[in-house]
Length: 265
Picture 1 (cartoon, rainbow, N blue to C red):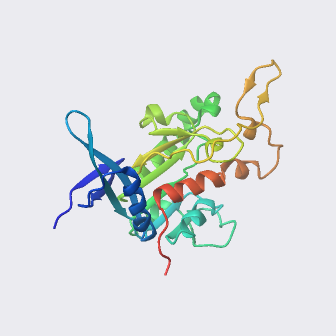
Picture 2 (cartoon, rainbow, N blue to C red; picture 1 turned 180 degrees about the vertical axis):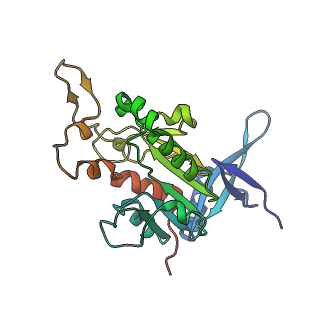
Picture 3 (cartoon, rainbow, N blue to C red; picture 1 turned 90 degrees about the horizontal axis):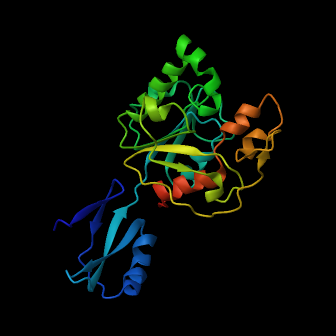
């Protein structure tokens, strides 16, 4: 029997034939399916007059995926997916900062290696609006165009599911606007760092733990800025590394909402 299917945020779910007369009953039954490794959506069916007549379960099987975390040396996002049972690998020109599956080299060389999903963190220094004062110079010498082409190459890779992140910048005009913007304080980290997510066959991230926005950076003229987390970091050789690491709360949300929990046998 072929089950009816439906797309939710670019992901295909299948409807079980079982009918539930209350949402409570449907949710109770859904617990078993979640334990068996499925994501479950409870959707109501109504008459034309709006009266609810049934509740259905729409299921998506969470499979063990081979996941590439592109341009990551920290291992933060990689480990979030790995601990949920996925075959997750990070790739960067640098060594990984903590033990884990890591490929040192150019990520463009491994895009065709049979990945099910890629979460990419392409460099932003030639793209972000905070460096707009140097755009003319970078456009003239080709650095910005090379960064744009690298980003697009990642997004157009032959990988079923893709997410790429970058702060606000030239990509909105040179490529397309992001599917959503997120903030660390939506996911339990008291900091502000507006980040765009470009998505392919993945749902938008849903906030998991909204907390205080953290410190506010105040300029000499008294103007308040939200980027306190980055602006208040003291100068150091590793400042760029600290700024580039993904917040743990965001990494956990990516792994849970895009990867779920599977059996790791």
